Image (cartoon, rainbow, N blue to C red; front, top):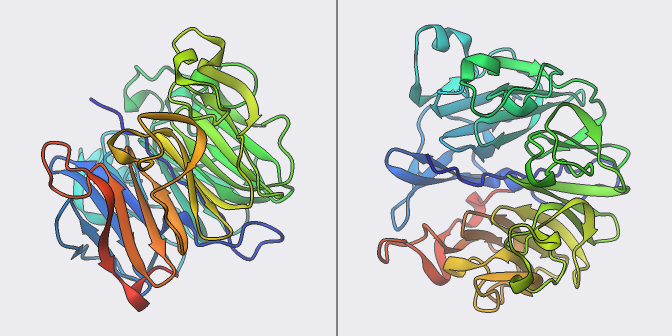
Length: 385
């Protein structure tokens, strides 16, 4: 089964000097048997969903929603009371309810309340594993536990194992983590500006100098004064207090933003990856980042920069198929929030207009992609706040 790059970045507002931006959990995408679904949490608490070229429809059973996060084949929703709901696949225990596992429920089209979780302030879905940040600064995980992804200190098992080998049917506490203010999959930002990682170490995703998988969180060396984080399937990205960005992990599509020509990035080359953080070049005054197969950076002036995989117009006409140097994305301006997708992107404009580009935007053939920015919906006062 093809694996999507599912990414979530969260920056909690109002905490010390951390980035003052809209949480990137305002919009999400996930896959079902019917295809890719996009989902948005409106300011009135309703959750709306649509597919490429289709009309928005309300997801019933969800009220007072403030965040959404998409996994590979499931959706997470956080409400303003601090409770978390899920829907979609349960093959890796993503729904967070042991009773459903006992009943052999493999999928739910209706929202399921995750058991044992309360006082949650942020959520993050990472492929088939889910994470929740509680008000007390602790992180909780459930779902696929292979490669140490649940961070509970248990023996690291291979991704070839079934869910029953190491999956968590209900949330467990990620060990050795406190004072956390933001999460992005198996990646956490602490109040002191340090960044911690755990789980699958493929391509140096943990940023610790090797490719080992670890079930216990540890600090990423060389990162201080971080204000926001975003993790992809094979890498990590950090926004620093000075408005610059550091990255580590895979670089096969120029994701590290180091300016190395794509002709020199190939399997087995030194440029293919970095096991430790490196600086993204020609990028400053950033206030928010979001990573997937391509990476988007929202600057303080409301413009958007991007780099990485640019096929299907994910980065606009300046991006090409691959770019390792940040470029202006579709000449966007007046942007309030951004979200990177798998060959796609979304932006929320200051006037409440939702726009998108790239893959799974409009029905224009087998790829359903748009080479230009299209207006999806003028949300006005209903736009995420």
